[in-house]
View (cartoon, rainbow, N blue to C red):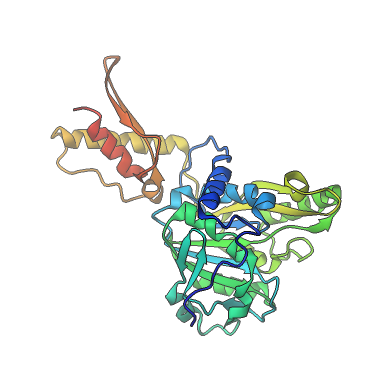
Length: 346
């Protein structure tokens, strides 16, 4: 094992200066406008991998959806197609960590053992050395998730079934996130690309696992993920889509980009979440004033463990009796409601 896989495309695909890079990623995330409350986060996302000026704003939609996962997701399984060095199967790196201008990310030491008996999994330093499809995702992941372990898989000549087998082996629970890196069609005229990509986007939404490489350069890892998603009954949400002719390129020969989020289980309705949060706040107040012997539990369900910010307002007889909260998420959503309820009335 080599100790480090250094950044290979910093200064080309994204800024090499740490402060500039952090600011740029933050700006792209801030530009995502989502008004609905985020109650939970995706198990898997599909993201593009061009230079940030081209596809960064689209990728930001997927990573913004992962904001609530900070502190919960501790392992990221990242799959992307090889562009420079061919490989048979799926390649793990020979490095113990990946480096970006934002710092180092440890490679999960347990992944190799978990995949050791699968013949389609190999170790290849050259397959990773200059591969951008994985590297460009790392600054976004560092900014959104903070500390996590990485399982980077450079996908070469493999079947969708072989990829699905690897993904299933690494599936885990809420601590594990699956990220598939792929662009859409390449080098068609703008209107032709819109037509081709529209069909591909619809097929992704249908969880079709027979997408061709002419439709998506990362079709192999994409098909593997979609096959697993179909078997597991996951739901998929299209977050954003465009092409380089919409961002920073001409329209004679464009590349398509898209972002998707894939979810396990049923979505939490805002009304249901509101009732749960209100009950938590009331229970916290009852405990503070001695009307309830036990403090409220906030460890379940999962969406209460996500990072979130709240305000708690107390009214009595139409009069304001207390109000406290924050606009910045600093702890789990459930913990924030309980703490603010306790602090709202001194």
